[in-house]
Image 1 (cartoon, rainbow, N blue to C red):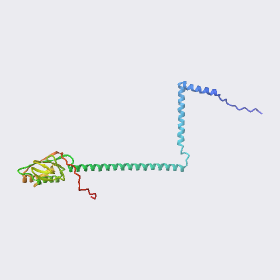
Image 2: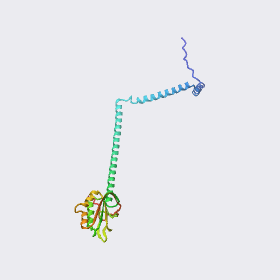
Image 3: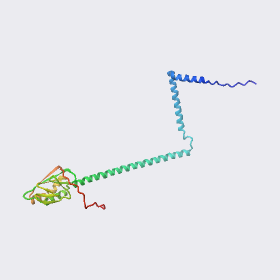
Length: 258
């Protein structure tokens, strides 16, 4: 029989040879030429690119092996998640709009309350005011000016929408004011007013003046029956500085039923 060939076995490098090879590789990397370094970098880049490509391929193939029913279930789950996200977004937007509307309403109510408080303070004579109006100067004649004549002036000014009235630059007229006869003049809320009487009124100058000068009005009464001299000036700006102290009602209460 012919002699069977003996299998050839490749010689494995000895540990000394492997160690020597690693040393040569390290030496090459440390002291290699520029071309060798470039080749090493290119190989590293190619290796990294290959790894990334393999991972992307694995990710792209995640759903490749799934059945149609599985894909439908996944799609339904994603659709449900998107729908829940949309509803949550709508809810948050509605809450935002409600808060903005509530804040706007609160600001509007606060602004109206503040404006109402300013108006009431002016009417009650609690704050100084300024604005256009008229100045009425009444000089007595042979006799004194009657209380009724001054009351007529005040009433006509209120009818002409006077916003503030002041006598002799120091006494503010309010809703509770009262006039009485007094020696040497007229008493306003317990304060003596001496002639000449100077009345400053804030409001529309033309309307206020018209409330005094009509036939049979306050000016005609003062001149014909009291013998007084009356002068009226329309002014672009009048400052009324006198104020009244706030008096809290004792007997009256707000009716919550109205």
